[in-house]
Length: 177
Image 1 (tube, one colour):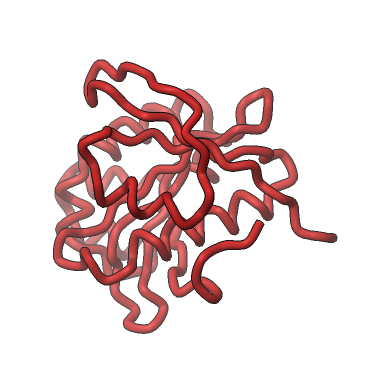
Image 2 (image 1 turned 120 degrees about the vertical axis):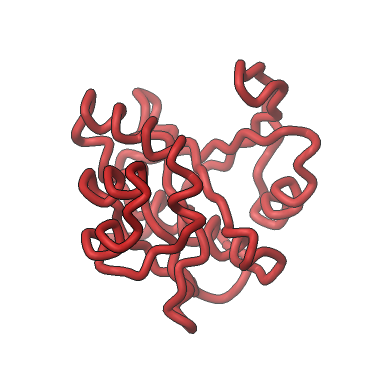
């Protein structure tokens, strides 16, 4: 799989249960200590997501390896958002990517770097065959982020919270051993 751009400039910092609990509680200092990185208020603002991910981790502890990572700009050391998957690969080897850039860091290429990093991560995992992305047709920025990676539009779905979403998929090539 040829990925746009040269190399990754995003480092991933796992957000485990204690870090997510602290984010939900609004305790940025404790969350940062647990993560080992200086997290930002934007991650506290995303507490709705951490609540969902905590429930998911409680039901399936193995999902923690897939669902929650802070995205750190390797050049500056700043947390610029978060990236991960909705969970581990399903029975046909598909994962759905999720990423969000802190509004203070948007329009600087971070979404592309996050997606590239997530695709590299997926390609390094033996059980992953396909990466899916679902995007609102109104989200022009995310549509533009996907375009250079070669995702194919494969359908539509209705999400009770997000409304209409377009489904895009990309086969993943496994790196040689």
